[in-house]
Image 1 (spheres, rainbow, N blue to C red):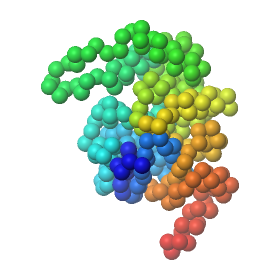
Image 2: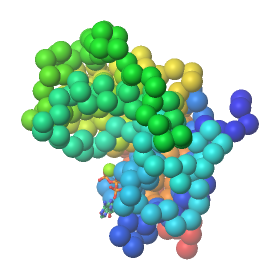
Image 3: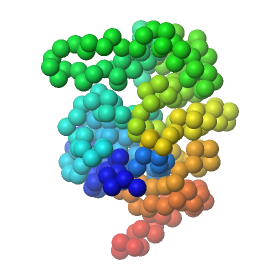
Image 4: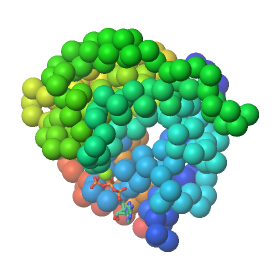
Length: 266
Ligand SMILES: Nc1ncnc2c1ncn2[C@@H]1O[C@H](COP(=O)(O)OP(=O)(O)OP(=O)(O)O)[C@@H](O)[C@H]1O
Ligand SMILES: [Mg+2]
């Protein structure tokens, strides 16, 4: 066990447009661990993921987020990505005019660029060579059972729901993050695609990586098995447990849990 957890979230309070959404969220994720974050619509799951990546709209009013022992709150989104954080969006945006392949190449180059801007000079390294990039992309696309033609299409432009989710997984596969947050990557996938994407996630998971799965469904957790399950209600984690907690939730729903809490805090 390492003493410093990879990701340490301490009493995080986050406001969006002046409204407090996260009200004291604490969480610890170590490398090699898979965590699941569940909770009703609007409880703040995506808010947490967006805050982690440094989305400008989400204001941290209290608490801290430490990644590898250092606070990331002052870091820009691209610095966080270079540090090894990755997030797959619940609603990936389309960028007509930018091919998926160019986007991936730019993302990889940004990730491997030697700390840009330190001395104000452009990086000396030229980025990933074209052939190396193509080979890498092909092998990862094969792993995710993706049609290579997709790489030549504009990013997410006209992609089906399932294609968008696979596209997010391809980004993760190519960037090899140290900590990945997948926000409802399972939603909108048909049964076969869920299987493929889950197999892909399992193949990417390694002892040096931490993974947070945000999901509404126990189904995903049958394929990608978490050691820890957390329930977020109204901006706070109200229960944490093992995989059995997800099964319990599926049977009882959140209402029962909320009622239980109300009694406990009355
Ligand atoms: N960019 C934003 N602008 C305005 N309100 C926001 C924004 N992001 C989140 N919120 C508000 O914060 C609350 C929590 O939203 P969030 O998207 O974090 O919920 P969620 O737990 O991810 O829900 P779901 O399960 O439906 O994805 C909601 O009331 C939402 O309207
Ligand atoms: Mg959400």
